[in-house]
Length: 455
Image 1: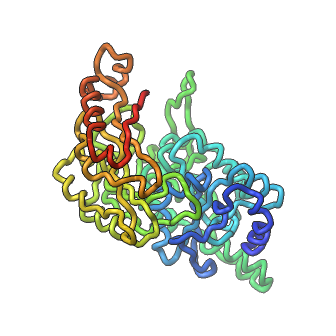
Image 2: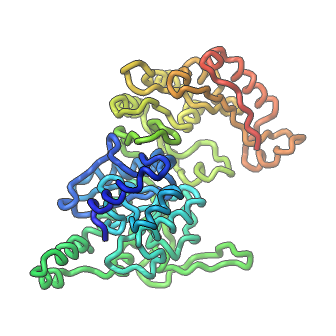
Image 3: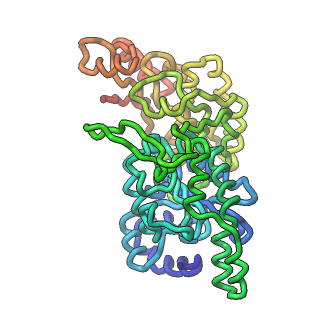
């Protein structure tokens, strides 16, 4: 297995031959590097897509912050390389590594994949192969990391059952600590012991006498944690049309039904976000002000699986936004859920107007969300007067996007979807919102324009 120094030496010879070398060098502002030898449990979080997309993933930011707050664990990041870099890595024998320490993924105790959507499934398998880790779970032994996946798409884990050791069903802020604690308890420094034995033959007897559980036994213990699904201990039964009929455990002492993990109270949001080396998608700070949704639209996956609704106080969000001023980002962006919350709770609108403005030397600018509901619950006047000029922040024009996934008029071809989703939005109401949006003088002066969204 290559050392970090060997990986960096090989990178020096190939990085000038790829697009955007900044994707692969690490060293970003606010990234966390800990002393490898003094940390008991090493966790690598992987977003199996390119750096440009993965850095902005909010779930990965939260878990990275949570684990690195512990003194006995560290978290590092890895992303899928672009095609040119992958070809060179395979040609030169470079395994996929984390950006913080340049260590191969195979050196870690736990690898956590974030899978928010299904198109990342094949990328995740390619990442395992590029890391030199057996792709199928049954082919791994005690020298390999535990491979766990979480995220919205893992609410249906069956497509990847043969490749992941375990899935986290639900939210990860608390369960990640349960998993780390269990690995520490039943796998005490096994990887470090193996490395010490190789470097010092006198430790052979000492290491051999160290009591450790088998990989399969540790997975059995993982299956007992609420929200953790270990597919090797369950059998899925299918209907004739290929859909899942039911899932049953095949061994005793594991839950018959895996209950979704829910965080009752949202922890404080991270404030020291990693500042990427290159311009990325959504290159801004994201402050999650609520989780869940009041709308109940049946077409919306996230709106269903993130229930129940939990909110952060206005004061907590404002403190997080102020703390982000020193983080190095140029743009502070409240997530789209901010607009939904303000629309549903108008009493909170004035307080959020105190969010920091973009000023020279004053921290990131705070443009308001660019989507307005067409049912009128958050009309454009809420957005318009507070919109900052995007030309001074991102060098381009923004778009005010009134959102309607379907109108409820019977004569409209898209009315069935709206009625089925519980959205009684008339075409007249949609047109009214669009007219008000374009008539907002502040939106026009700020360089915003109206964009139609057709389904």
